[in-house]
Length: 336
Image 1 (cartoon, rainbow, N blue to C red):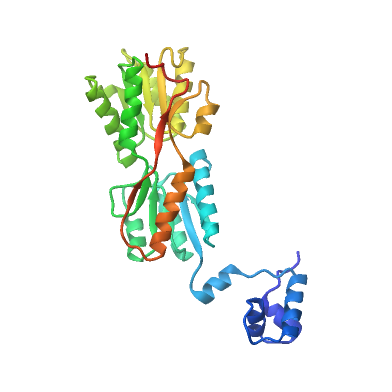
Image 2: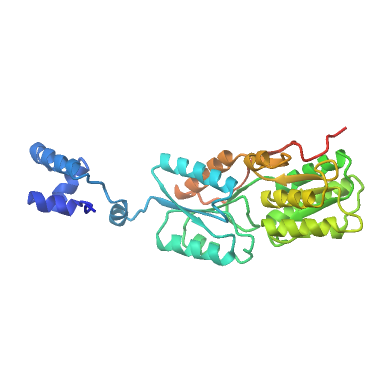
């Protein structure tokens, strides 16, 4: 493999100082036209490319930001990362994308690695295990811009999220209007703000329509496929099983449909299901899932804007609400 040529190599070949090569390649004065042409020609012939890390050390700026997500393979996060990366590129920034594996330990490790790489800002969605925010408070103390998105917390850090409580209320009311009365809630850990906000919306809708909250219909376990499957099977084994489910995550919604079908039941004839997910996942499921939809593009744009404002010296903490709406598909009964 051919060794990558450096400015030092060019200087050695031409018998000149490295500083002269640097000035020529950056278009600065102090280099004759003939020598500049010779340097540029050699650089082009040898496929010279500037080393961004060497430049960052020289000017004490890395021009990189870190993005930490619970699962980069999950469709909404992948689309979000793509949007942020596009916005960052327009601003001349590189992105370091890291996956916390939806664990607190993984999240802390990602943050520490990004700190050691001297990134200029961090964008992060909390893992479902995170209840200690010491690692995030350290970023703030060290004046590293930080924005939370999607899964946030009641802490003094800027964030972008949808109105989880209001949207869960709307989803539950849609099920009630379709005739459901025994509505189950399928959520993640109770310590996750996103779960508690959506659960509050669910409960608010039940109270609004005079339907009692039944504790046995509320399952708050883990945000993964197996948890959704086992929790739904438990719900279906109750003496009075649910006739509808509000699932707060795409994996929970898909796994709940699989559990329902495995019992010989039909969706939505026997049981309606609503999920919080991406349109891609909804369209791939059979039947297509009624879901709360948000725009990863809008999310990414708003999150990057907040981070860029902080990088430009704006210290005010801002909590921004991203748009979202209920998209009715085939997994819920039609409202009369």
